[in-house]
Image 1 (spheres, rainbow, N blue to C red):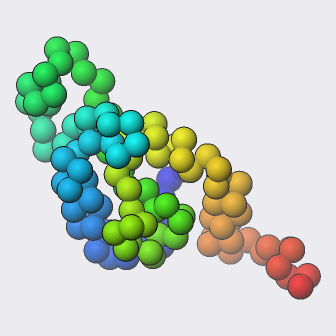
Image 2: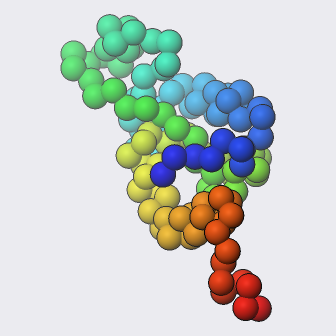
Length: 112
């Protein structure tokens, strides 16, 4: 699910980069090495020592699903596979929050 950039702090790119650098561009869940944005495929191959590595994207997950909570203990560097797996448990709630963000009325809350 694409992120709504307006929900994130203006400093998010810097925060996310710091988390990724701290883990040396490695997924904290499965240990998979991920390619840096400025890294050529050839350099990536040499760095991880594999002839034909799969090139995974490293992302940063908010463990509590709150994009405004950027404390260190709430952020985890995850490859896209692990990030999607982690977020699966929150998917229905995130869809509802996204609809509300764009102005759809939540009838359950409106009736309270």
